[in-house]
Length: 467
Image (tube, rainbow, N blue to C red; front, side):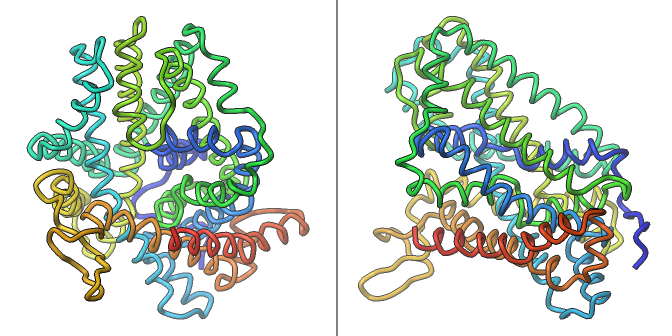
């Protein structure tokens, strides 16, 4: 296969655009609340050290695999794997791995859009001063009022999907590249503004101690968490990085570029923690994990400290930007595939797929209110039920989709991409794309892709299933 082939969808003008795109895909809601909280919970500096090792052994190798498959194929993930499997004499079933990833990305986007829409509502609320002097009870009631209102959730879900579809419909250069050149620098600037504000709270060192105290006794407890987050945080396993890799210039170094993305993702997550936890401590609150930190604890904090309204507005704009940059990466693989398959315009394909995600997302909207009693995957005394209304236990629609994607489809996708790049593609093709001149470094990279990363993903897979 010619290695100078160019994608029909366009190309990034430089490797730095790929870095912005891949970092935008990786930096999402989890970076804002999950990683900082996990760091404080699992031994601070000890967890950061474990996480960096896991990034090097699991996250970066799989990102390398996705990127080199994408750049070698220069098509959507499905068609790239189809062409490369034929080139290498591999099974015709390998493209199914990309299909699984593509479906997973669309399903994730369907509920991600709903949750991201909450940040749009909070931007308005912060701007109006709704949280000034708010009590813990008031903050809980405000969040409960949002999630219990299906019409309000539908409005923000719809608006967020329109924003996402608009960027994708305009194409790789006019849409993705142009928006990312604005969106990502703005995200970094907002994060630094928030960090600067946290320095004025008088509790900055409390945040530093929470994040970086080195507790080696929690290493064993936190290793699985570090492995899991190293896999999930880089947005691998769904084909987003693969399709971004297909737009990457041939002259760019994949290894250096992927390492830069991994470091930037980690720096953003740590900076978010340094920016947010001093604000939480300044308000006399305890940090919590999950959406509760973003939509209950932080609004209380912002509402009860000096200039909190401005800081809160900056924060929720930051959250919306992080979610937006991630969401466009979830839609792009499927859009690229169906443009190639049908020959239809990007605008038509994007509109169709965005509507599909919106429609599936309505199940998540209703999960928090009128459809809360619709339960899936129910284990009862009379056996297993795929669906049961009003059952004890089981999962609502949102929890079911989250379980299916994060615990099954994503690990399977990441495992498949690593095995395909490591064992199905020819050694010469991998060497040509990685452009590693040192035989020793190339063999190390190939060993990580072939052996270490797949074993790591299998461990994460089993750990997730047994939770």
